[in-house]
Each structure stands twice: as C-alpha cells, then as structure tokens.
Image (cartoon, rainbow, N blue to C red; front, side):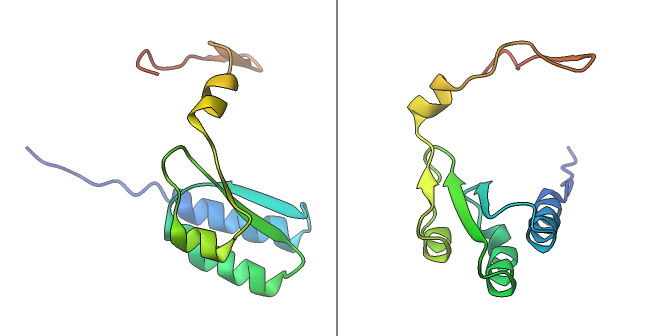
Length: 105
C-alpha cells in the first residue's frame, strides 16, 4: 500500500485572499471559518499592516483554538444547532450545475 499526501494549498489561497481583501479595502470585517493555526502568520501580518481591519475567526463546532482566540479575542464558535438550522437545500443549483450532498452528511 502506498500513501501519498497531496497539498491542496488551501491555506495559501486563503492567506492570499485575506491580503487582497485588506489591500483593496473590500471589507472592514473579515471572518475566517477555521480552527487551524496555519493562518496565524497571515492574520498577524494583516492586523499589523491594516490595523483598521477587523479579522475574526468563526470556529467550527468543537474546534475552538486558544492561540487563534488570543490573536482575535472577539472570535466565536459555531454551534451544532447553527449547522442544523442553516443546512442548504439538496441538491443546490448554481447556474447550470447541480451539486448534491454526500449521503453520509
């Protein structure tokens, strides 16, 4: 059996978008949904370079992170009930494409 790790570069893409949003002043408040500290350096730098921008984390259910909370004290958690109350229809239609939820959701 061969295991292969594939880097999707999601954190890099989010960090680049964060800088773009701050630099082009596309938002005053930015909320990042994560409990992962990989974005900490980008958030710290954006807070230094763009001190008027408010950057928060929305922690997924059961993923609260003390390090991120120190970085953005006004961050908040998404409860299990909030997930249930905000489920998208299935399937969801976007333009000419239909997207279905996996059966195990």
